[in-house]
Length: 161
Ligand code: SME
Image (cartoon, rainbow, N blue to C red):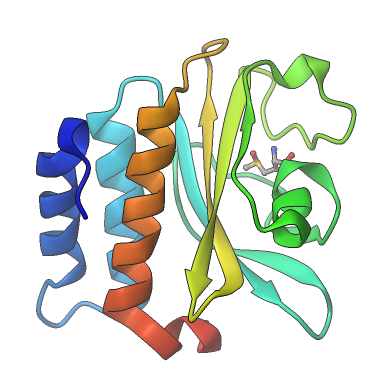
């Protein structure tokens, strides 16, 4: 089901993912670029995917300032905690989090939503914002729907990233 405030955005994301000749990296990067451009409080958007053998997350696509944190162990930082909890993690003020990995001093808040394939948490979308407390339930619904589209579009290709 599509979510009303973001219906239009989700339809456009679906079109980006279905672009002929594009591969999964192109599609994911286009999705990151699109979300960052369309939503004012999204300053960095990225997708991490899990390696269950090494228990590490790997950054596979992003839009925004490049980060040194392209690999994150399960359990570390907001992303690493979501790899274990399988739940959305909204952080209104990153300075109040102990288990947080800073990518840029400008970032004030973060929202991470897991991406499921056949019920398994295989990755996540990570949003950083330079504003304090900008996220609402609408952001969670949008990102959950976006992750579902990606999972449905690319399916098991996501496992070989
Ligand atoms: N802040 C994240 C690390 C990834 S960056 O936001 C790009 C964390 O605490 O897991």
